[in-house]
Length: 462
Image (cartoon, rainbow, N blue to C red; front, top):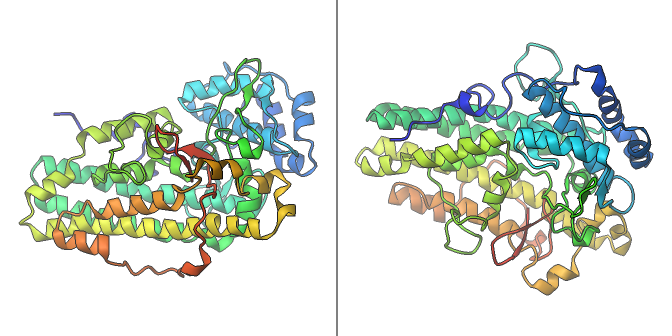
């Protein structure tokens, strides 16, 4: 029997989850790297004045990474270089299809060390990009701020910080899930039941955290002023990067998706702990076939150790079978189904957020007329004739999220729970989006730009 994963082996903390247990570095300590820190400290000003490319080209030196002493320093370097890379590509007029060597060379080496793609990811802008306001206090939305942003605005900071707090609160979900697996192996039904109940409560808190996004992040500002800088350079023909971006002296361009909350390891960990299986959107094929799903693709954008944690977890997750084999224990079954109900409720709320921040804003972009589509910022949201020709456009955006939600319900252990989760409507404490405001559109691009949904090259977006 394969041992359960030990959190410390994978840089996962029982206290902070996938966040580093020690706070991220706010600055690299070496004087040698001061030119990097000086540049990124005025990033929003360089974008505002459209000087980012000139300053990088003329003033940024080519530095080696061999003076970085530990993972915390590598993470800070990665965050700096990826923010600079995205600002360089997207920050002035038409996108730039080549990164200068003073960004690309150290970025490639730092990324290789961290086992993560050389592009801005969820790790770079969320997991490794926050600081305390008052030292020694607990992590909360009242006591954290961002280290680096593109715009220098409250909306962008809040967008990242809600995700930071989301990850922090998610640590208990992981702990309770692993304890439930451990107790199941020991045949301790009462303990399994107790841990599942605590896990359900913890998942419920995640939904409440996520719905705080609207408190200080305006959907219009997010979509038109923040999201464009998070875009990658994969399937971005319509935004002006048909082939991707060349890194320094390399001959061929590289293509990567941009930063997205889909790159969070937490939700994939919850699915694995609860044995929720996902399929290619609109199909019955399981995710396990290599290269066929957005979920698997996004796993490649996680740090190497977190990715391996999920791989280990996938080999030992047997809680569903345990509950089914003890289905005569009503409290156990209801506790497991409660976890699924909370996870499904979370996904319902996520759909509400995506609708407000992506779907409705994309429709607004088109309604504003052609003058709004002349900038790179709006260009990432505009209607694409090429996608229309392919015929499948962005059909995987809401269908993908809704299918993930529905697959969560289909895992229920009891027939009653399955009926309630699949057919019933959970009463959410959120303002609904009127159905008649959502147009059926196949050309809506999501947080990470474009992505291929399966081996048949269907086009999808999230």
